[in-house]
Length: 174
Image (cartoon, rainbow, N blue to C red; front, top):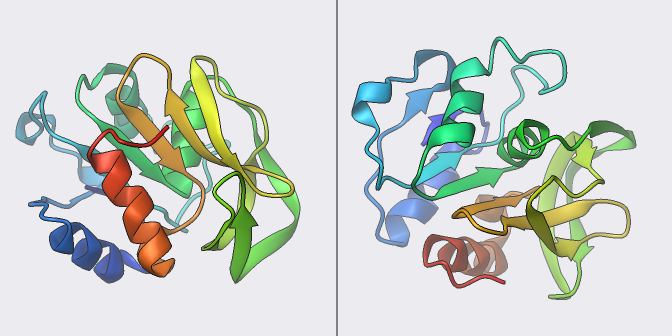
């Protein structure tokens, strides 16, 4: 797991553990490529240290992983924004920040928990959109690589979030 400064990291760690995952946590500025195997699943957490736009140098190693890692990658919140940015989609500033609130996503018609100021509104090249809210893209899946991303926080979205994360981990979403 790459920790981008996520406040709810302990909840994400518990959810991944409950789903049967063993994980190693690396800070975004201390990624050790020698510890990452081609078959590893990478989880890119949310975060609040630095926004994606204008910080390519700060996220350079994480962007490199997104471009080159042959294994599964799952982006959460800022992790989704990094994936979308890496594949050419613009990251936009929302008119108002979603601060710790529930939103409904379609077509699964479920409520999930979000907290962010930036959003993805254009489909990244090579991706399919699996879910949207009334204004933003919420779940994407790469068309040929095992890359998934969600704008919301599964670790704060109860059973719905856990089920979506489990499906991503098992390549059973979309």
